[in-house]
Amino acid sequence: MLHRFLRRLRAIKMKAFLALLPFALALGLAGCTTVYPTRVELEYHPEQVYAPVDNAAGVAVRVVVRDVRTDPSVVGQTLDSKGEQSTLITIKNDPDYLLQKSMEQALAARGFTVANHAPVTVNLELSQLYSTFQPNWRVGDAHATLVMNAQVIARDGAVTFYQTVSGDGGRNGQDPTGDNRSAGLDQALSRAVDNLADRKDFQRAVIYADRLSPLPVPAAARAPTPRTTTISPSR
Image (tube, rainbow, N blue to C red; front, side, top):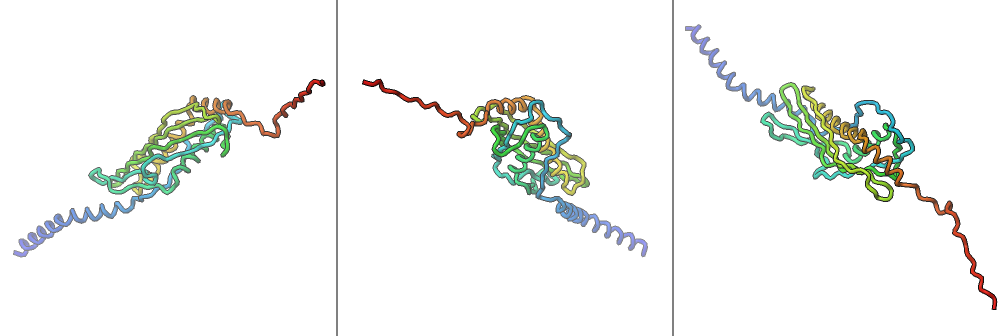
């Protein structure tokens, strides 16, 4: 009799445990999602040491960036277990300043001189910087892309280069704290910048634009205009 009662009691406990298990798992998973940060800080990381470009010495360049995205603060999304958006990923940095300084660093590493009033301008139009982050039980996968339009413009307005350049980044099986979200975006940024700076046609366009941009001669250094004197014939 007692044995039968204990067996029934164990069965009741098991049923109660199984009934509460889904709620416990839901609460546990909900608690886990709070460890993923919603804001990231990005940084340019060149993947190697670059040698100076031939004829780059003495070529002065300035970088101008324009962000044409709808919301510059948003750089991605976090998906839930169903693959639907749960939160947006925003950036702590100023995207324009970040891309400008990254491109300046890449140009300087290749032997060009970066100056605010340089005769050659590299115009960058940022059209996409976005990451999709999929958290899992113990890992999180991030896939990021950066797309930009690049122009090289001489002092007189001549365009010597115009191309769309992109870079992809991704980190899989990383620590699910969200660090791989910024790492994937860092990689996309770095690859896009290096993809542009490494292009031979881009490098040639910058050097050619410099040759089309002679420095204006200061007024004080100009040769004086010869003065002519007209002598009227005497009557």
